[in-house]
Length: 521
Image (cartoon, rainbow, N blue to C red; front, side, top):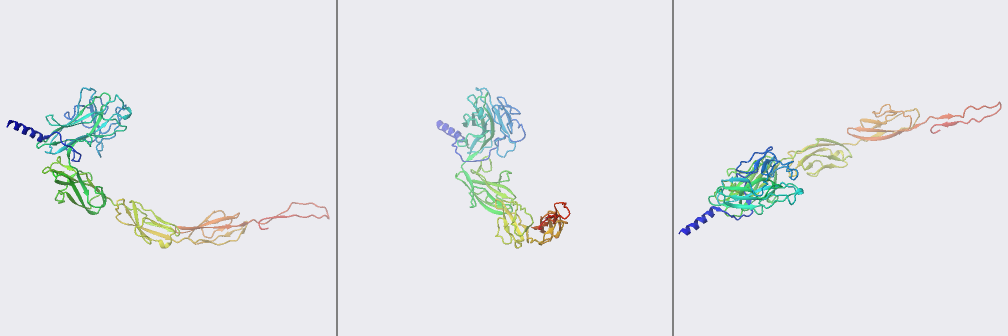
């Protein structure tokens, strides 16, 4: 009986804490309370408690061995070998902090970079432990004497018994600063609680000496529940089942979201919504009776513009109330898009024979309607227009998601008749003479050049050019005009030239020779 008792006791201990859990990739829960992304703000961040790290805190990144700091960027520090790191790893974390470490220079001493007690764990639940690590040593200064981080991730009981452990091995330098997840996702570090385990210790320990390297950054230290693959999909055929859906503001639509988890132990369901990144919230069964079902019937009833995400939480029987017990599907996204605003000139005029073309802005494309246009034409373009093309057209903007502007903007198009300018024929004039020019067909006249004209802005100016001149008159009616030319030919006046005085004797004769000048003499 005594031997039997000991065997039963030993089995009971193993049932309480499963030291070597079989750990496969699947879906994850949110980081439990005690996970660490170090917060955000201006530099420097706050010192960690002495229970969390045995390193010495400093307020900047000019660190000596055994020192650390909490910063939102690492710029201009140890420029002989360190990367400049402009931001932390945490996605969408403005001025997010990270833990910058210069490890010990004594190879005989290993230190615990990070230590954290985690409680409120769920029984018989698998958890994983990971962090993002950046080797600060640049590739261009790496060499045989450079030292690189080598870390041990440990999960322990509060009494120090090891429940799970993973060693990174030596990290490698990179050309640009790069965060990498450790333990690697394909070989996660995890363990499964027993019937009564509710708290554990997380440790990240240094295995490498410092002195010429072993400088690193830690961020997003995460401990979270892990379970079977959990999926969520849209059932409608409007796109791939896991791709975002896009609707327009003011529209209502019903989606069916199908959840699935292939594990009989995880049959408790809870759908969640995250509206515009305000955080995940359980959907109440008061608002939606299918919120705790595998299939969510979702009525999207004209919500405000924004990004709405939905995911399925699953847990074992009796554990859904604790967020530390849940695992989640990848979120599905519904984008509610604004209506485009159409901008266009309300009235546009053209002249007969021109091409009517009107440009609108707003949206990705446009739908034009009006006299003689096919319905929803992509553009308003009418070559060789006539007054018959005058009328009121409308245009509506359409976004890349198919959302249409609230109203169709009217555009009054007027095509004016073309100007038929005429100019009367004239006769040549003699030098010093004048002639009256006469044009018709419009209400505004402009003659060029103005040289020799008594007026240049009337239909019938008097022209007295000194030489033959071609005039042009622009005849305008409204916005339309036509140009007509006319040439005033000026003949030079006749002139007789004699060779000068001649002398003769009495009874002699003389031949007088005159030479005329002028046009048409």
